[in-house]
Length: 173
Image (cartoon, rainbow, N blue to C red; front, side, top):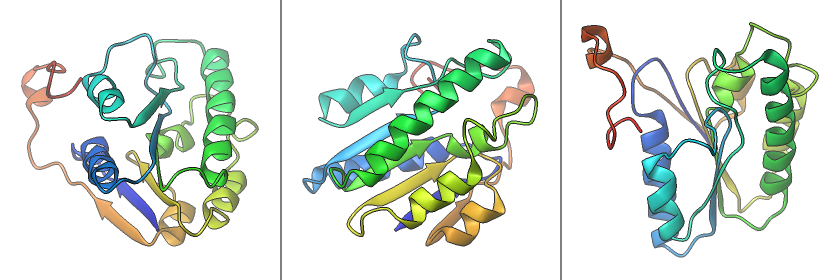
């Protein structure tokens, strides 16, 4: 299956992690590849997932406003090559491509040459039959939605960010 968690509401990565933990609990081989998050920041999920035997790879350099466009382009190119290799390898039962939708929606600098939509669609369409791929992030492109077997849209009803509360360790990080 290709599963997509998208929308402006909170919980997309959390849903994907829950699915990954469930799969690992059934003895499935799982990898999580995070496109925007940087390995230089300690995210709680990465710490515990590694302890559970789930591979986690953070291929990004942080949010788009924290680095130069070229740094992001290089990270996206390397991250996509890494992800594509692992999706197609047949070694994993579940591959989570966290924030891939966000990466594909970047418009502040060109990404088509380093993260081409046609390559993403081709990879997802040609994954091994036993491999399930979970794609997260707001702004899922129509091509991804059409290819998916399941799409869930998270809708924000209320969020503490609007009251000035920033990311909470253990809840958001």
